[in-house]
Image 1 (spheres, rainbow, N blue to C red):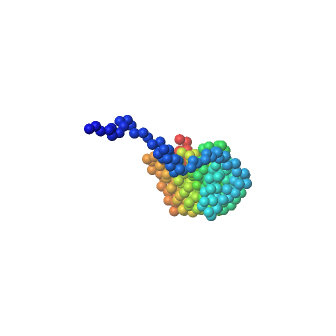
Image 2: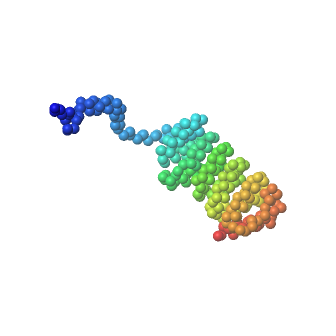
Image 3: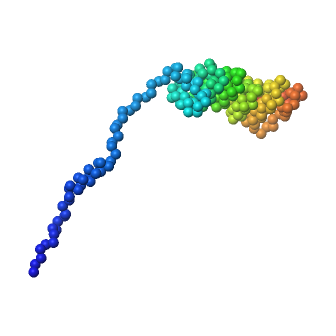
Length: 251
């Protein structure tokens, strides 16, 4: 008794209608394509008045406002630095101090060379301002950016009544003793003999001189000096310091 064939020996035909249904389902589930946005145009340059506002807002009580103002000034490049420099000259108190601090942290690498020199000049003038917060910010700028040709003005700030100001000088020149030339070394030694200066000031002068002596005369013993004793009774020590400064400046 024969049997009929159970089925075809070839491949099973695909159900194309099922494939189409799956494809339609995938399309329905996929998120809609995001439209391509035109490249946003760069923000237009800020006006001088707007930058002046940003410079004043560096002293805002609102941290976010300070941050945004600093960012806009940095983005403005030389114009932003110029606005900050103008604020240092025209403003008082915390506004002037805040702009000096902004300039102290600014990267002058991509700016015209004269901008850094202008910042140093503004800081040197700030060292003579009445408000202690301005003098401290000015000293910080010269410490961080380097005094350049303002070395003598900066070294003189070691006589400031505020120790925080004095120690910006001590730290800069302790780390960079080679920046001190003959005029600055002799000026420092002259402060040791100034009886009108407070003992605390002469102590900081002496601390800086000891650091510089170690760097320039390594291994040699520095002249003995007591900042708490009257300079009038230390003539021999002062003469030795003066001789050292003159010899060191000729190297």
